[in-house]
Amino acid sequence: MYPQEYIDYLVHFHGDRDYFECHEVLEEYWKKVDNKNKESILVGFILLAVSNYHHRRNNFTGAKRTLKKALAIFIKQSDELTSFGFTPNVFINFIKGRLDYVENHKKYKSINLPLEDSSLIRICEQLCSTKGLIWCDESNLSDDQLIHKHIKRDRSEVMLERKIAINARKNKGRE
Image (cartoon, rainbow, N blue to C red; front, side, top):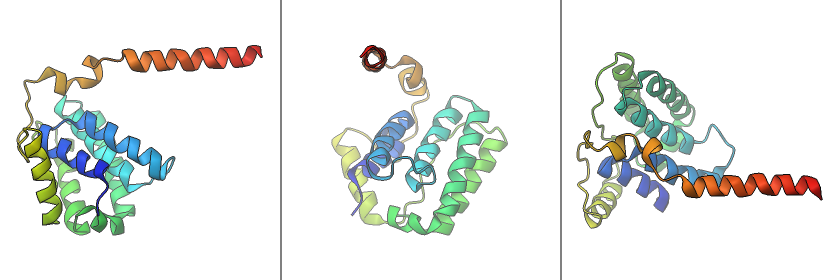
């Protein structure tokens, strides 16, 4: 009923609180099913994770900016929220509350999205359990790898792919 990538997103969001992975998992899926549609509800969920990533790092400007964009998408695509396990007005009000929280520069606190589908919650809880995670556990604020993942992650593979693409473009011009 739900795409595995969305379930994985929820497990990261509520389990290990790895918002960077939330972004990665759902972006790959978005590119496969709704690429280039910046108004896709998937983009809203991606931006929601990015907002939490920024907020946890005390980047209130980035958190506010991305959450406002996410909220605009969720409002525009509110009819789709049901198919992701939410009651639209409850979810949108929840996000508005979070935006108010960020705008008032309140310290990061883990959030649990107001999922309504108990079968989806059970699936996510089970998957968390198999990974040694606790569903709706608090974020580990002392884990620098988690908090600053975009800086601390191994980028050697990304850099190699970028170098290969640049060389391919250069070689194409020589033909």
